[in-house]
Amino acid sequence: MKILLLNGSPRFEGNTEIALKVLKEEIEKNIKGEIETINLSKLQIKGCLGCDYCKTSGGNCITKDDGQMIAEKILESDVIIFGSPVYWWGITSQMKAAIDRIYMKGEFLGGKSKKIGLVTVGAAELSDEEYDIIKRQFKCICEYLKWDFIGNIDVSAYGKGDVLKDTDKVTELKNFWKKI
Image 1 (cartoon, rainbow, N blue to C red):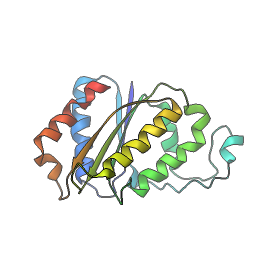
Image 2: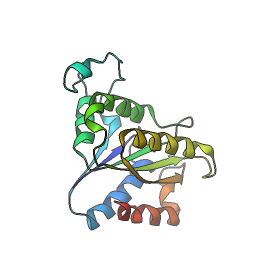
Image 3: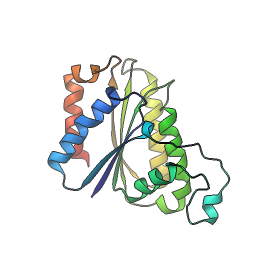
């Protein structure tokens, strides 16, 4: 089983990265397989040009950057956990660019058996609609591609390391592997 965790946070060692590390540690303890975390902020991923070159080139993109590699990793993975802080009621631009670029593999992705999880970290209270907006976006992507949305964990944490202060959320992160 191949499990991919995508960290969309531009803040290194911030709450999103910490949350994904907690989750990854439990996955490694409980599931055999290849587990990889990629920090999207360390990569160069340009936005989709909408040129449809990928439709005539077997799913390859005309833009030569790390977007091709991310799309390949998603294609090869059985489970993908997307992690993003909330920026203006949405995911970060790094995560959005990566998601947009999987368009190049669209004809190969649809109907493939994949499990998708989501971790969102925001400064707002958990009752804020920002978390629901992002969850709905990912559910729509999963519905479109016929992927299995296995759940999400929303965390309200602002200061560096605040995610670890919420013991209930840490427990939820530690138990998320059971949905895989």
